[in-house]
Length: 450
Image 1 (tube, rainbow, N blue to C red):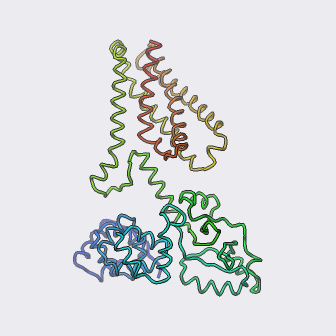
Image 2 (cartoon, rainbow, N blue to C red):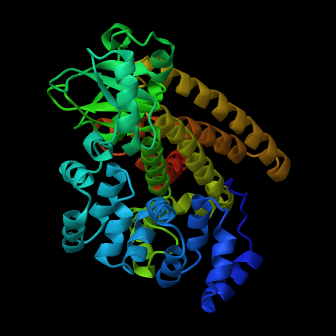
Image 3 (cartoon, rainbow, N blue to C red):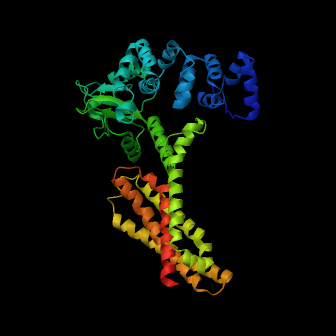
């Protein structure tokens, strides 16, 4: 049955809530009958765990399992708190091994062990094997379900085996060819199998130029490899080259999404992975550290300005341009650091013409600084008239742009070399640093030229 397009609006949400309150199972079933499980997942975010369980219990086991698997980890944890271990076992038995292992890792150890003991034998052995690996390495990402063929089989034998193995594999893009010791030899595309003569030996049509990843490889490196070679799936091998699983593109999309979310939060000055609906204390704890650092930066700025109170007292117009200097320095720094952080996603960025790139950044900073200085000089001339301060502000602004661009470029490179996330340089850190730098340049220029 074709799933209908679904749009969650207030009217439907309120009507669905009424049906939930009245335990109107007929309306709920009919409403969700032709809706894609992914859309049902979006709907369930609107309700609490007990209400969501009632809805899920009205659906088929397969759909329930898919919905539970699609939920984010925090929401899923609260949902599953309403389920017995036996009910969770039924759901997990419907999932691929990698998804099953992920969910079991989120549960308390006691419940997790109870569920593992009740799993189907095949899935149980696969999950136990996967739980040995950390979540952020290839071994923790991979699924054990895959299609394999021996190198000495004929095409017709291979096709027959595909029919048997495909019952346990939800998606597959190629057949991995192995020898009797399970060592990975290559892959055969489904197109090649279909077009080849039935008596052809698999080793004669396999592609031995295959990209694979080791079980210990970091998830970010796996994502880079799959993106670089445009792979829909990649085989995972152990240190001896034996095939142990595969990673599909949907797993890597999750990794990329999580990394992007983490970097966005770091760039925003949030120190933990938090959601809007998390507790007040957790949200406060995640935001407070960088706000505190910002306050310290502001206090240092105020103290620094105190050193030049004589100059400010003589020419009060000096204070008018402080926000301009600080805002420009902060904006330029964030622009530069954001571009570098984005470029660092390319592993060859640092090695491929670093000095050439830095020269380009410096050239852009000179042009931008000169353009902004001329614009500010013209505006201050019109507004404040002919005054030496106009020239001083323009000169200071020029050097602020150049130095802020340099700091914004170099800081993420240094952090990356030291093993820290370079995204740290794209948020409050670079803003606070360039505020102080801008003030220093501004007042030193005034001190020297006025």
